[in-house]
Image (cartoon, rainbow, N blue to C red; front, side):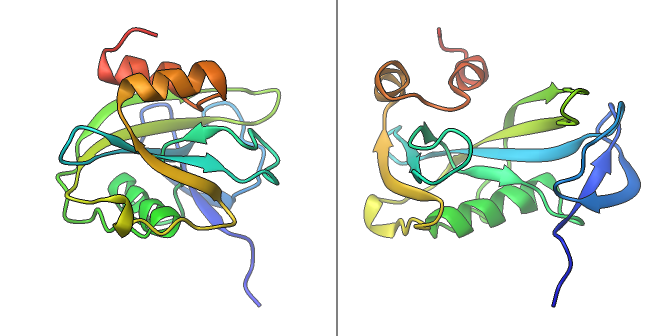
Length: 171
C-alpha cells in the first residue's frame, strides 16, 4: 500500500524549499505548491477544452483546459506533460515548453497557497487523437478563443480571466 501523494513545497520566489508534504496539507505563509495548465493549440488555432465530470467537488460541469497539480520531484514541464497525457491521451513532451503566464494565489485561511504556470503548446492533433479520462471529464472539444468566451458566458469556464490575461485578450 502506498502513502499519500506528495508535493514539493516552494517559496515566494518559486524556489524548492527541500520540503515535501502530502497533497492535502494546509500550507502556511511562504509555502506554495505548483499547478500547471495547458493551452494545447491545434494547426487551425483552436484549443483543446474539457468539461469537468459532474461528481467533482469543485466546479463540476464547468469547462476548462487540461492541467493539475505537480507531484513531488516533477518540474513544471514534466507536470504539464503528465497531466495532459493522463487527462487527454495526448503526448506533449515533444512540444516547445512555452510558459506564457504565471500567477500566485495565497489563501492563508484555507492554506491554499499555490502558483500556476500556463503553457501554450502547439501540437498537430485532432479530436480523434484525444482520449478523455472519464473520471476527470465528460466532454471535450477543440474551440476557438471566441468559443471559449461563449462557454464562459453560458456554462462557465475555469481560469477564464487568467487565460485572457495570458493571451492578452479582453475579458
